[in-house]
Amino acid sequence: MIALRICKSLIEQCPPEKAAALMQLMPDKWQLELKGSPAPTFIEGPLLEDDLASIHTSWLAPHLRTFPEGDIRLFLAALEPEKATALRKTLGLANTLPHLTKLSRSYLRNELFRALSEGVELLPATLLPNHPANALMHRSSAELPAILLDWGLHDLAYEMRKIISTAELKKIFNGLNKPEGEYLKSLLLQSEPLVFKRHFLQGWDGEKEMLHVRLEERGAERLGALLFGCDESLAWHLTHRLEMGLAGKVLKYRKKCERPRAVELLTAQLKGLLARRAVGGSA
Image (cartoon, rainbow, N blue to C red; front, side):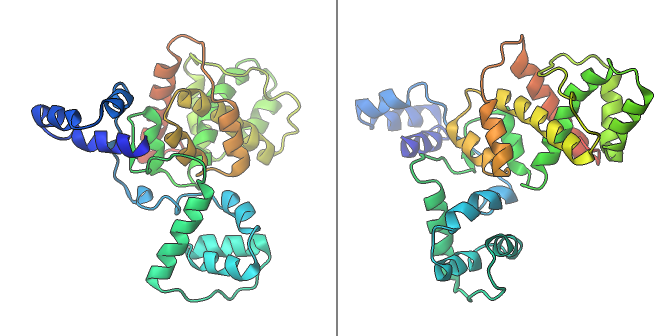
């Protein structure tokens, strides 16, 4: 089915008459399967050229642990140096890795990605159906949690309107960096149209790290709602760019939001977040 959808995408780039003629060459069964299915669209960008390069190390470590140490070293040598170093420390391996030829490196990378995606029919990251969250495919594993945190500030802005303690408000702002604090202030000047969870600060001990964890989860719920009904390939590629625990939260919240205009509002918020980042803001 994945191959058929890619074929459909290529056919739809042809002139209408030629596209119709090519579709007619397919067996009736294939035509029925393709009818109504979203055709993938080509997406370009440096982070989309290699599906394995964007996968977070937390997904790789458990899989690599199933191999003998010699095989682990081979796979690590096939990865980007920064990712290999992080995984080597996680797995408790010594510093030396074997030298690989270009061909062997390519083979090992393909094998590792194939094993990680086993049992899942995946479209390539460069060939996904249109969706608002496709914009996140251009963001790195390091940047995505920060985007989710910024998105979670929308829920925080709603909560802060009910806080009257100056000390409590100061504690919240102390837990944010300057761009995050500025974005939060801008959100406080407007009414939040889409609140996902109230009272999520209850029990917060004032620690900066715990505030970030809660805000990332608030952002994860918004992303999960936006991903409801999306192509499974998009959900797989995006969540595998996140740390495994945070990805699990996105998938947990991947359900339909019953609030009016939810998808429209979430899409607009995501566009705004990414636009602010493009000009140097936190969001």
